[in-house]
Image (cartoon, rainbow, N blue to C red):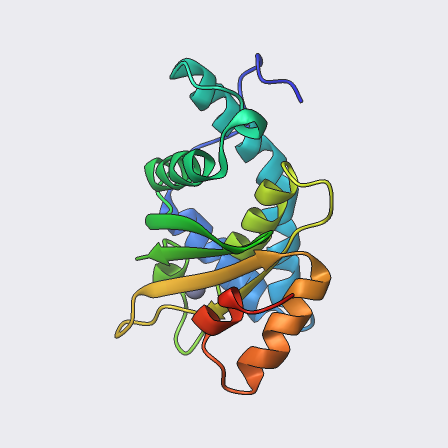
Length: 181
Ligand SMILES: [Zn+2]
């Protein structure tokens, strides 16, 4: 991973992104999947920018940081990048929960639309840069005007499937985190 080169990022007006994602989300057939894949496609560049930012701050590389420090640094990085107020928490082994208050993407939703698909794909790719297995991410709560926090679970495919089954039976995510995998 090249961290010495400028990260492949560009600043876009939120309005541009809003227009694009609304059109893709509303496209017939696989709109949300296309958004997740697009988020995933850019995640490595975002991770490179994270490494550059860490190095500019005199910090160790992401993979060398203790988990608590990684979590707080990554949260700060996403927040500075305009994502919203972000927190990363590890729940149990490799399962993590990511909360985003006032998530930029939930604020760009069209009427009646729900789901932060670009963010889901981005988190999956970003965390996957550190893990030695594909990291799945599932949004279990999406902010609306009344409830402005989006909550994502991240883990390997088995963990997420297990967590999803338990959530769909009405369990709270906190008990899932404390449970057995
Ligand atoms: Zn959301």
